[in-house]
Length: 397
Image (cartoon, rainbow, N blue to C red):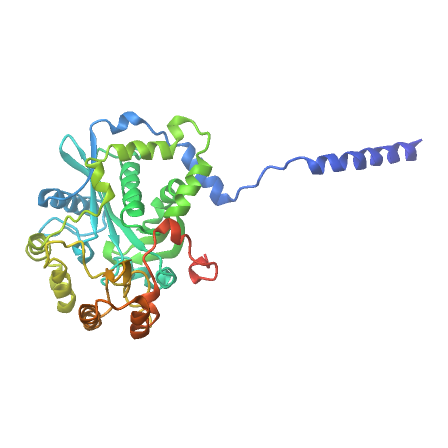
């Protein structure tokens, strides 16, 4: 009887095996995904926290100075820099027309600030440490910018980072809709990395290093694909409770942005007069920059429309210029009408302008023959460009 009993037991297990295999198995999450999910679960989003809060772009000298001073004081208190005579922290990258400073005001006082610094001929602050890590993004023609100079006044921080989320919401929206960015990059201390990875789905693309500009403190480089961020939000926050719904909270933050119509166009806070005030009188930033670069920056503000400036990419590591969006781009707006002509060298740019002026009837084919494949690239919205090609090196991550 014992063998029969054993056979029956085996038969029973075999009979039920297919049924068990057909049951839907839960998707196993990685340790990183689990850690981010737990972090998100601890965040409580309250609409009441936005009462009396105004989010705007700094467009006056007073607002810009208040923002730069807040960054200076915060960095000094955190041990990221030594006190400076002018009590402001800014870099040459803030002098670019597309550089934008977002501020949060509470009862008329600037209590938080964050800057978005698009890539330009001067590069970005992170190039000092992570230039090699973003070569692939530039080669793929991705429109990139660095988010930095983030500071919140003491007393307005808590375990619930409402102010930080409000600022990031405004910066992401402006970068995606107005600047048409593909990626936002940020260098942060490793202890703050989880906040950005969990809530904004950033990925680490640069290893931990010592950052000289913050007194040798540790830093890591994170990247946010803005299109992927929107898609990921819809997936992660589907059917979530209101106090955990980050996309809904971000939408409320955007409604709190003063001058909402201004978000549909580029806003330039800098001017020729403010260049002198911030970079020559209040600080000595320009004295540490090559004279040719300073003159090129000043030239950007010589017209009444500083936002229409010569925008070029920085050289790659081997010293050769990688022409891509929007480097040496001649965008055909209407038949025989060109805009946004730019070049990696002033002499090349002058040649292009002379040819366009002398031959306004030139078509795109003629320009392509004269200047090469660079003129065949056109400025396309981020939604239409989409992600970089699968063969592109920037997908090695």
